[in-house]
Image 1 (cartoon, helix red, strand yellow):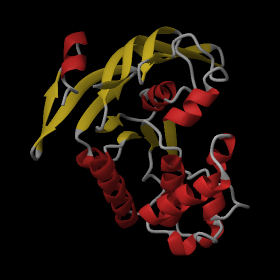
Image 2 (cartoon, rainbow, N blue to C red; image 1 turned 90 degrees about the horizontal axis):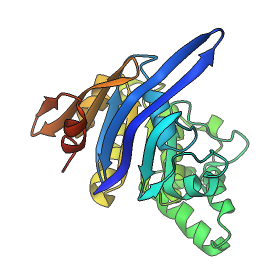
Image 3 (cartoon, helix red, strand yellow; image 1 turned 45 degrees about the vertical axis):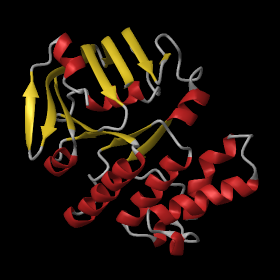
Length: 249
């Protein structure tokens, strides 16, 4: 089942006196439950693509449907509540509040859900801190945690809202190789156990190796799509028909 559909999506920015074409006529289908990497060099458009899927940016043209809802033409402010309940975000810089404990960082996004009482918030925070192996560090602030532990807090925070999709922007970029591998294995285990959909932007080969779907992007265009079959990638051209078919389960 398609969780995300992009049809002929373009996005451009003004940078100084120049127009930057971040995305050019991109069509893509992302199925529920995938562990997908969007790979490309710096400036290729992968972060813009992630921002559009996350409804924190808007397209200039084209159509975007997320979890059955057409979000095209809506502003990020109009989509704020939908975004908060549908999408979890993980950033390479962790984006934790330095004055809050690990517990409070995970609880923070839940405070905007009026239907959640204190007991349910407490149960959710405890559950997801335990899931990422940080129950004993609940009272620690970010500066008392290692980089890997901070990213685990960020993962718990993203999952606590029970999102339909988790978007991770270069999640291992600020971690050493061993710690990055541990974080990838944790996210992969969550994906396999709970069928949580993960979409990464990356240029890290180890992240691509962990994925089961691959989107290669360059100069704002999708140039290839890959499906993992056993231990190898089967790549297809990024034409309109293939972009729908290649990511099918």
